[in-house]
Length: 195
Image (cartoon, rainbow, N blue to C red; front, top):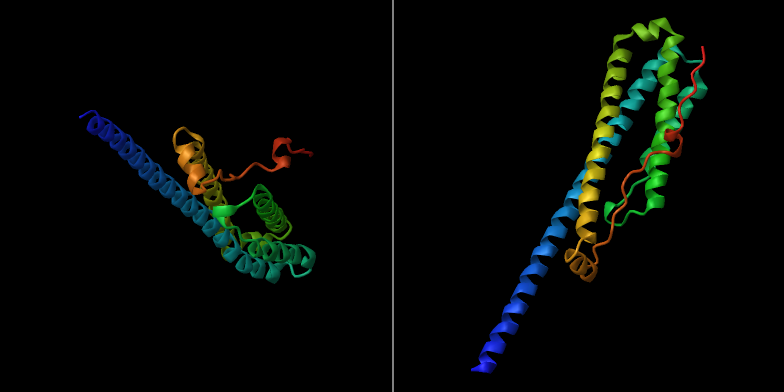
């Protein structure tokens, strides 16, 4: 009789551990997929921006053909930014920093391109340029929102991976902490404005 009671206690503990393990594993898989989806959304917004750039460059070319250096810089930055791909399942901080750097270079080049419109009133008045500029501004906002959503999803995932008792199952099944976007080092410095 005492052996049956001990056997039932052992079976109950094993059942509880099994249920906890399955629940933890499925929860981690779900959060991992949410991180992958959030990253796909970030990439989609960056791709949207990259797709707008050729039209913007061609529009500017018609009005500011002698601004070849600026146009070439945008094209080169776009090429570099679109060549860097990251797999969110095993992204390292270094890979993400390289990706961010390339995207930052593209943003700077685009800023210089958009500033050209101040020197060319006909370009500034061009409806196609205005529409592309508005789409690009909207895309930059979408990129910011997608990055925030990605960071939030990574934070929730990392909390699960590091929280007890899920951290035990995360270690057993190979779920590791993920890297989020960080602000550029230059973002902490106030821009200088001179008149």
